[in-house]
Length: 219
View 1 (cartoon, one colour):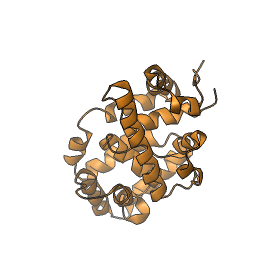
View 2 (view 1 turned 135 degrees about the horizontal axis):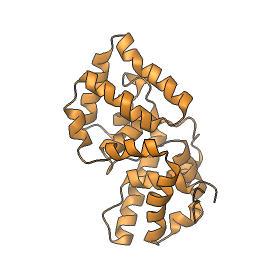
View 3 (view 1 turned 90 degrees about the vertical axis):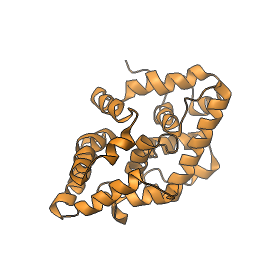
View 4 (view 1 turned 45 degrees about the vertical axis):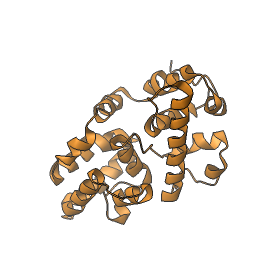
């Protein structure tokens, strides 16, 4: 039987008990992720992903997105199939140079702000076909977990359960770039708060997004 959240989202957000946060980030999260996806995720979360991507050429980056990242990020079969078809357009349309530009920008962000970093990965703005806000933020969160958390439907709905006014206006199924930056900043601040509260250096926006992804489910 799949374990359930022990606290409501509001209770957890206010909780000063590290055991509750650790439970959501580890045991509860593992219970909700398909085992095959969790195996891919563990590989993606190993230190050095940025350096690994930096060593790739465009074809290798394409294979990485197709065989690893898209399989992990897009858990719905129809959604994954659709996004993989979009990704394949880089091959059929001869736009691998565009994919290479996105790869270089990902590993050499320079002075890119958070919104610019998300924008340059999104397919509709010249980035990777098949990536919108959720996909772009997820890739950035894997490469830069200290700066980014993944922004998607479940994360947005969890933050709305907390009642934070700056997220109540956001449509979870039509997240804009400014919306994403707002929620990433909330996760960054929460990670800093948890580290101070628990005397730790474990918490990052990426780990906070994992907690939100599971903790907002019905108990």
